[in-house]
Length: 293
Ligand code: PXL
View (cartoon, rainbow, N blue to C red):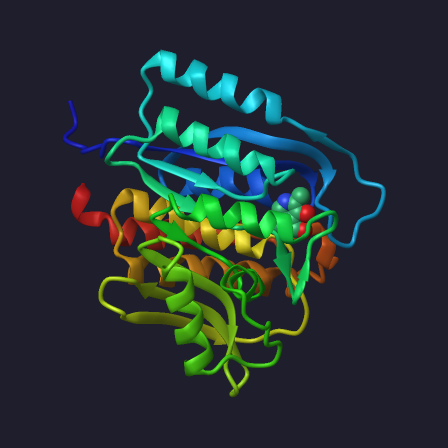
């Protein structure tokens, strides 16, 4: 017998849409969470042909009626969940369904991560409006960690969206208003500095400390990058990484993926080339947890 130590596997329930083409939500969450060494169980909120940005004519099947039966069946198996991580919802009423899923599947140890996916670049995604924002406010009250981008953060906080750069006073006010909604850790993505950097900031509600991971900014939108960042962060936190470790490692994976897409000139709407960035990511993850075995 060899003496290899295999750490116990953690399990996340990922509640997102499955957009068949365009690398986002579950088609990103599944590989990224698995590459982090965490099991990813999936409850699809909807099945779409593509995501809803820069594509027209997409199909969408709302799976709201299947979500609770799936969770009940999982509960009957005795499976336990170390994390529950939610993202894009097909309708505002799915937020109530997610709350019922949390009642069924979360225990005192379960980390609840809510990515309030609804908007980017100052605008709601297709078919979404303020009702989705209201629904996410209710859901966030039950989250330990939230990961809005700067547009979603401004909408949730009821503040103006600032496009060009985000100063300390604006960010601190955003964090405080989001903290009033209930989460313990707030990660805001896509924050821009005056000196041309873009990155992600994490705010610890208890201590008021902010940690940040900034990279050089690239022009335009990169679909699915919020999902890559949040999926990696969720899995790393569930495995026991600290917030600064998780933030840095998740940001590097996202940034490498963008770099590869620019190199390959991949059309933006097809998502970013995260696949080739996974081997280096896995090595960084192993480095964090090497004392485990
Ligand atoms: O990546 C966020 C996202 C997830 N799911 C769907 C989307 C988007 C962004 O456009 O349309 C269906």
